[in-house]
Image (tube, rainbow, N blue to C red; front, top):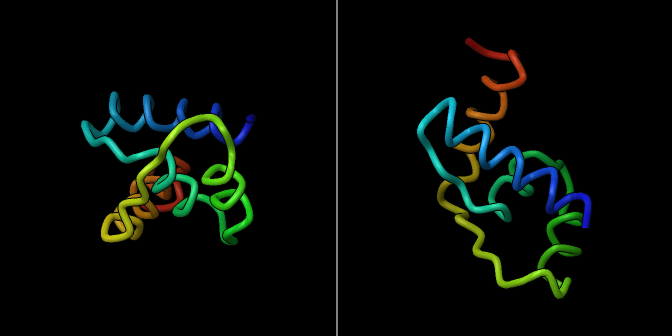
Length: 71
């Protein structure tokens, strides 16, 4: 699943650059505007994932920093 691999990579980059770790499902929710990719992940046979709903906004901010959208 490409979405999983992409967000696993983002998880590693964020860990290295920001010393923070977000679950893959949390990053997908924060990075994608809709629920489709998250639902595909949750229904896949890739594994069991946890959505840290309380950390989604924090992940949005970290992703924005990573993309250079905010300082």
